[in-house]
Length: 119
Image (cartoon, rainbow, N blue to C red):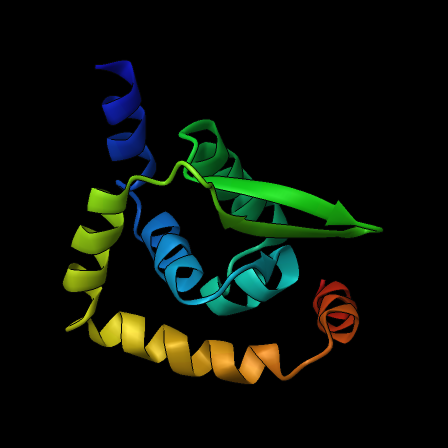
């Protein structure tokens, strides 16, 4: 019962749900790309990602100073299907997809520099 409860709690936040939706559509995203999509601070996004990681929904890899997230290999197939069906009619999901297209055209290093300059 503990694992399903962790998943439910992890997905009980709109921002975390949006990240999972984005990762269903993209192999991996850099923290700076997620920050830009959600329009939240880096510490807030890091906290969200930690919750998703503790629920074994995402995993990360480091590449130098960059941190990339992807869905965990053990991400439940039935959950993936349910989420894809649920997001198919979501205007917010469609807006995030368009936003991510623009974000992914930017160099992650430049994106991070721009975010640091905004502080």
